[in-house]
Image (tube, rainbow over all chains, first blue to last red; front, top):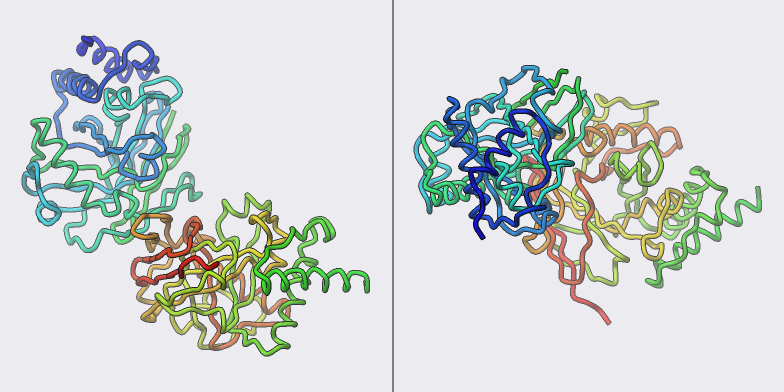
Length: 256
Length: 266
């Protein structure tokens, strides 16, 4: 079946620009993963055309529990641009988003490219620094409901990222405690072990997925490893803090 | 009052018989004054008196219901406690015969071992820290003598806070070397992740749970003593186990510990 890649990309891109939810694409067209990734790439092409700069990628469904909940076996991925970076400690306007949620993560900064087939050791050696991070996810679909094809096309709900201090002396990151608080109340508790059993596996998978799409992970790119816990919905006035054992914290605020 | 006493003894006996026979019993709550937690503790105390009377050696206490989510499920706003006995302590990786556990589940915890008594009124967190000799990684094997885990708050309190066995790992670590609040916890069963969490899932910090327990024990006239072990409470969701399960819990900075379950028994 032929799919109007550009048309669907425009629809999702405009939904994000206007911060307005749209109906699921799945209601009119059943996308296979390859088509959904084409739509995602087309959205990013539109944004790069508007002057945004590509600076990394994000992994999704990296928690086994979350993948099972979605009924899928594989991780998914999205593209990150400089326009998505929210300054750590800043206040962001709710008007930028449809129905934002936050997830606690860790972020990798690469000191050299990481090609397809990289081993865990090579991935480890490509890391310049690790930081505590918050991903702001914001599905462009009504009620945050979507099929696998829908969410891939929608850049895996990626919307913003808040990055805490970069730690260049990297020790064992396999089981760092993670806490996410909103307005001082702890809402999610977990560990980096929830990210594919060990977050380095997420970086290895990122190298494969991005490389196979013809976009080898580059020096200076940020890779968001995936959520360490379930996501939490946000309201105006919320102050979000993510703490990761030994890495520090990342925080931001949502204002009207 | 004497009617209460008989009732308490009868309920305590029901739990002991379930334990001895391996056949779980009906819930106890319908035979207790509704919502009366003191009454439920009286049932627990009756069994504590009984077991100490027949020569079992107490080795400390456990704190239960330390997760906000579990408290909400059971409709309470505070933890509960149970008693530990020497014969319930299992070594790291030592096989547990299935006949020793009833409807077992596992939880990863921080165990604290005291080097000083905590007899002062309302011990503070600072006093708990000063009294602690060291911490160990631990797995609590929770069990229920109540059929199908059909428990409400009164049932679990009466049933020694659903304690089964406790597994202690090592080596011992000093509190000053640990971040008990943000330490990551992952538990695997046969290599599959079954529970994740961190220190602060336990009342914000396992030390808070220990301080709550210490104060409670002074209040009831059975203070924590030097040498006692405190099982401070779960760092994540509890997970079911089966015959042959091999469970490993890792607590970042504290180390790892294994609970190994024997084969199915006829």
